Length: 346
Image (cartoon, rainbow, N blue to C red):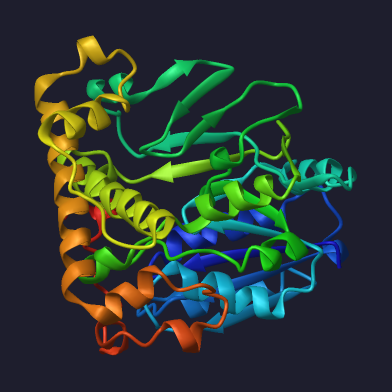
């Protein structure tokens, strides 16, 4: 087995079906890859979709674990992954037919540890005009970090490890294990403070080990964005989550508390997300700044007041889920229908 493809999902059966259909149409031998769907607690018809598609693949596995957070599906799948190369995509992503062929080609170089590819965006409805202010660069060298757009051109090239995003993420299994797997990511709304830096940790850490990060234009995917993800409410929630991520990273780097940034520091932090900071729309800038303030302040307060939360943030290895999933809030019965994270705008 050359490649393992993992899709983590919760209550997005129809989007998952579209992604599985795209995987079934790959220009790559089915005998050389496996598909693992890691269900994070769905109550819709996700299992029925997987039962239907299992016959379309030579190697297909369904696993279910309702513990909250994308980390669970990632690491449960990693435990059983047979591929030397492990790929992770979201349940609202459709890979192009050349995706696996491009990934396989890039890893023929033994120095390569990570392979990203283009991430194109497909909007359910006409995107709002303010989105252009958050789109950085020009076609061929363009990103939209808030929604995962990645366009590094039509040539194979090395790029920084922090541009390998979970929407289109592949890494050598040995490298992923060497950096102790992923950090927490994609928590349900009531548990958003447990969000961390997910795959960004892996990208930076694998690159720091000396491995190449090789962008391959054939390894491309389409990220399908529902209308409720492209609203000002969702942007506020997205940047609150970004605040949790930034605080998580800072606390781990410092090994303990840090001083809450001041008003001007928050303003400069928010301006970095704009194409032309001097032209940043006032309302949008304030929404992003408010989100960052809320996320960082809440995260710092939780870290100061909750010893079990401190242990979660500073945990040295998240691969052993049983050892890191011990916080009382993570062990409570959660509602799998709770989709009130930034993606739903609540």
